[in-house]
Length: 242
Image (cartoon, rainbow, N blue to C red; front, side, top):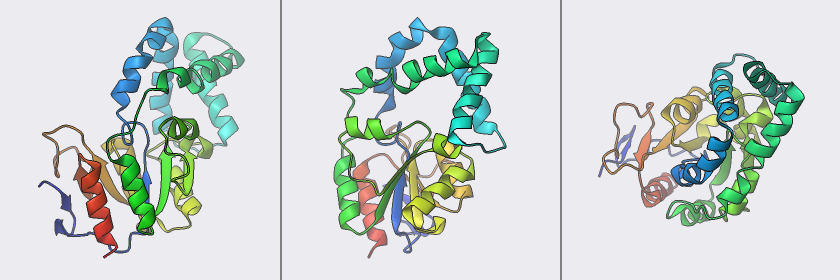
């Protein structure tokens, strides 16, 4: 009920799909549980994290690409201008709080029910698997027990751009050795995941965990497929191979 594809309800929309790629935060695990654990850290450094949020929104809208090193320098420079600090100080603090500080808080986070089984079923079905996140994902997928299941794991920061820019999605397609049209990208953000993947030529699936939000609806970003349970996604994608 409520599972819709562009070919009609319950019908595969793209039999040429050969790869399935995923966002991470909020897509493979419930990010509200992580944010709850992160709250004391946010309270301890409110101005720093507020500046980080402002700068990330700006970088999501930015129009020019840069190298990974330049990305972190630019991010630190923008934050430094808000906070009145030196860029080097912001770089060090960002590494300590943003890129490493979360690790002790992540140990008890678990994937959504059915994620690991779904990934294993896709691999068994012959699909290539990818992961594209706006934050470095390698350590997180290790904590989640999902290491070794993906053929390509990328952070958009490595490409010098954030979603919804097309550069990270193109890099993902190259890493999977597939054309964008052969990839289904799964995410939880209509604005960043769905819009970005669609613009890059990929097919899209949107996870909505609310019991009232299954099915195509306003605000889904035009996703080809909307689901709330990974068993639904597994059934649908495996139907593409038939």
